Structure formats: C-alpha cells, structure tokens
Length: 114
Image (cartoon, rainbow, N blue to C red):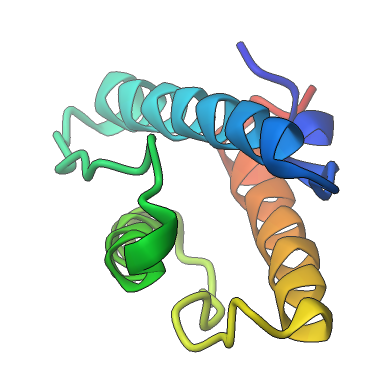
C-alpha cells in the first residue's frame, strides 16, 4: 500500500511529477480495491497515469470523477480538483495541498491511513 504521505509530496520537476503520478495512480487503484472489499461496489477506474501535459484537462476531469465516486460512498464532501490553472504555480501548489488533504480524509474513512 502506498503511504498517504507520498501524496503530500509536491513535485518540483518533471521527474518528480512522473513519480508522483505513478504513486498517485497506485493509490487510487488501492482505494478502488478497498471500496470493493468493504462494500462490494465496483467503481470505474479512469486513466490517471501517464498524464498528457498538453491535455491536463482530461486528467483533471477523470481525476475529479474518481474522487466524486469515492467520496459519495465515503460520505465526504469532495473538493473541486478540476478547476485549476495548471500553469499558475500558486494554483498548482494549492491543488496539490487540497488534493492531499482530501486523500487523507478518504484514507482515514477507509482505515488505510499510513
């Protein structure tokens, strides 16, 4: 199981971002397996890795839907992870922070916080 702490890492370069996207996809797959184990509900899996940097909107949309699906089952108020100007460093860093906090809430609800 991937540690939630790894989701808190804000990538500083392309290599770190590539590593983050792999870890992030593994995390999402783990949550899908855990939801199925706990509830017998099979949620759809969306392609989150690799991320096409020239079409970040596809990633943002798919990623938002994965959190919406998960958070509906966990009864968590999801946050808007779709509307961000990825080119704006302040917004991008804020996105990573909001995403990490939401991921921590989900992990706590699933009992898989590590």
